[in-house]
Each structure stands twice: as structure tokens, then as C-alpha cells.
Length: 350
Image (tube, rainbow, N blue to C red):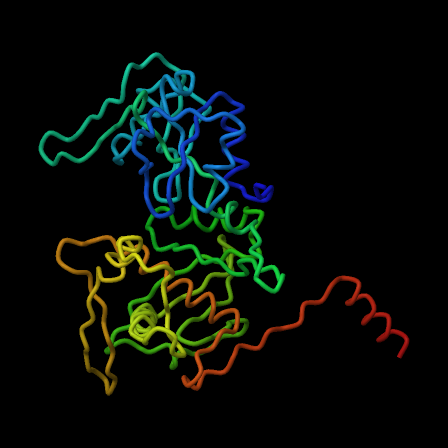
């Protein structure tokens, strides 16, 4: 029986009812990997077989979805001119790093067309239609923060803290707005990585201000002003060394970080991202620090950053690695309004 709480399956059903053809996309990739996915056509009964599992979802465009096409704007200049040159549409989507970068239409376009810079060959605009697809979600936050996982003993687990990288220039305000307005605002926390080198002032010498929360190589400053969203600042050099140390621990030993399965090919993308940086041991101001740098060619390191964020989120929730001498953060007991009213009543009576 399919899981009625699986948002991926629910999204596939919504898209099919609108006349669009959904296609399954494995986690961590941008497009379908099944051979002949362009020719897949699902019925309602087929959906649980393909979408009742973790992953993502795309829409097969063009003929398969009633003429649905996607104009993908891949450069800042295209984004700037889109409102002037493209027909108006209310169907506009995007992502934090590129808001309003997808414009949707129903049109008779025979096939996908790509327009590249003649010198750099970088994509400018892509008109996706028959033979193409676009990744559409559901949104990662909705897909995973709404979900519950059941342990063997019957206990239910959920994600209690999710960090979102806010170090993306102009999209920083977009991340803050999303964290503020999301239905999962209590779980979401914008994060800012800080390069704390050997010559930098370490987090341990940070002067705590009123309202700040300071943890193990991270801190959550008290905030005022227009953003009005608490965020976490991370010593990325320390936590990247922490992740690599955990991966170096033998399988089954305390403090180790292990990966499921026995097929290395299943984790090739993760391995590429985790090894996209190298450490340089540096000494200055009486401190020795491993400073992390990208390898030549600037390879993608996003999943490495995600592992760092997961480790920091665990630390914020009170997870402590034995032997590090770190004390678990004190968790305040949450009070309900009824509890505060009882306390006020007791105070007045006394």
C-alpha cells in the first residue's frame, strides 16, 4: 500500500489530474535517468509504483503535457529582458538563486530549442518542449519537513532543524523571506558560513551580546532590523575538518559517519562534492588551523556544504560527539500560553 503522507506521490497525482505527465527523478540529479523516460505515460494506478519513494519529480513537456512549455532563463541578462520580450504570463517560477527564471506557456512548439553564447557556449535561454522536462518539485522543504519516518521500534522521527545557505549574494533576502513566511518557519534557519582562518579571531573569543546563543564553533546572534529572522553563523573551516574526520573513522567505530549500501557508484556524486576541496594546515597567532580551499576548476561542493550544515544543525539540537569535551546545549522547556497564565495566577494569589 502506498504512503498517503508521501508528498512526492501526492504531487504526481496533482500534476496528472491537470493533464501533465510526471516523471520520476532520483535524489541529487536534475533529470530522469531511466532509459526512454521521454516516452513514459502513467495512469493513476501506475503512480505508486514510481513515486512512492524518496526523490523528486519533473514534468515531461510539449506533446506529453498538452503543449506545456517552459522558457528557462539561464543568465542575468535574459532575466532582465524577459518581461519586455516574452508574452505576459502568471505562471512564473524559480528558485532562491534565480527567482522568476522559469516562464510557463501552452504553445505549439515542436521541440526543445537552446540558445547559447557563441563565444563561451554558456546557455542563455532554453525553450523546453517535446523531448524535454523540467524539475518541478514538490518543494524540498514541503517534501521532507512534513514527513515522518518510523523506526523499527515504532517511534516516529522528523527533521527538527533545517539550515538554508543564505550566502548567495542578492538571493540572501529571498532566503530570509522564505524562512520567515514558510509554514515550517519554526524549523528553518538561514545560515552564513564564515572563513575563520589561522589569523582570524576564533569563535571562542567572540564577545557574547545580550540575546546571543553561542555553541560549538557556531553562534546565533540576536537580531534587530529589517530581516528580523534569527540566523546561524558557522566556522566552516572547523566543521569541514569535522566532517572529514568523521568519514575517516572505521566503519562501526564510535564517531564514524557511514554511508548506506555496498555499491560505490551509488554515492559517486557525494564523493565528488566531498573531495572538491583540500585542506592547507596553516599556523598564525599561535593557532594551527586547517584552511579549506576549492580545487582547480572550481568543482561543485554543494553536498559537502550540506553535510556541514547537517552537522551544525545536530549540534544546535544538542548532539555532542563523545570525547570532544563539549557540553550539550541547554534546551529550554517550552511554555504554552496556558502555563504562563497559571504562573501569573499563582503569582497574584501569593
